[in-house]
Image 1 (cartoon, rainbow, N blue to C red):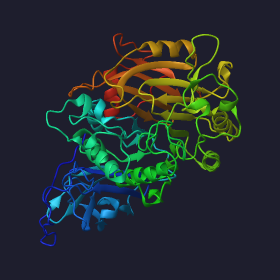
Image 2: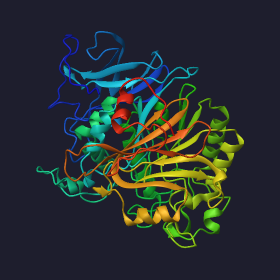
Image 3: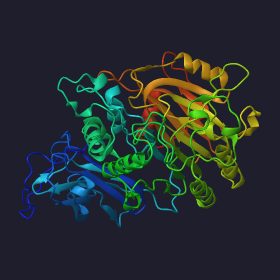
Image 4: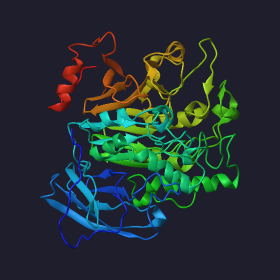
Length: 543
């Protein structure tokens, strides 16, 4: 584990800036690692909870210095520069650092005057031609501040990871009481968080609250992030230019709201200049490769989708869900994904996806009942994605997904209800960081899903994240869970581990924790063995 701390610079050229308080209260971050480059991030804010959303900053611009070194004491600085933090972008900076070594660990920090930020750790992707032996990453989603403490983020920061993927609902647009909802904070955060988030000042304020959480800051400082959004970064269940039915911002007003939400999203996350919004539009679907081992294809399933069929609720599948003219991704993004399937060289093709792709039938009887906001509402688009992967020779398709506030393992099929031979890939659905409250190992809905969906192999409704280890032979997902979030200090454990073997679609249970602690397969390691392996040399995990 590594967590950075503050440092001081003594050069007289770095004179004190006129701040009323420490300006790095939102921490530091890095993201979108390439073989020779990474983007760094910070946002100046002396008072993140200032009601006007400006973080207590004046309307002037500031010169922000950054340094990147091979050691956390900054004795071997390899790159440094100066960027300008302007009020137009909420005093955020996003320097893109180039000329780095592939697959290499670095440390970075920022400074304004004599004020110095915490230190962050980052890591570049391997060289395009490298077939590396191991990649360790985690994915997370759905972190409502009002639902509980970010203890899972703290545990994530303590994992030794190459990269973290955040799959959406980084924050929620909803209002909360002045004591942080379920957190029941002893000190008031103010009444400015009452009511739903609608404009730029409030989106900035919402990020200021969320990002001031020390556990989230620790997670960002521990590893580079690759991020995409779902709905709550703007508004619940929005679709392209269409707000939810109960929206407070219908029509043109919704596009103004989307413009504000995307600007605040860019200002507060480690995104490159290519993701700088243009009005209500932002480009976030992209591909990032880890040599010849794995390609991350990051999706955007909100900005280009057709409106949800059958009124955006639970419905019996019908002509609207199977209409070949409907899309969840937009036609241009669909074409882009086909192109990536054709050109990407990674052994494992991973879709970083927002909402469950596998069918989730809610009817325990002979019929089907699905929720139409995820891919079940866009069956034709789902079929096109899976068929194109099949036609283009994708052997190892893995979808990683957020949104559900529960853990699933699914077989991916083009035709659900068809024989097992139709299994074409695997979906790992990860639970929330906090959303949904404390949760439970099993709930009635989970029992119903397992009974109604033979392709669903695992269900759990606790909070946490998914830790993944990828080797040339195996893709293993550990479901890391905490027993509670409504009070701080929860321990972390692995509820289950599921493994996909190279060339064999579908996952097999490798380890099951909880009450039984059962191991599956021949010579399966214990939980202690799993952790020991992750700390040392890679070892193939039997399936």
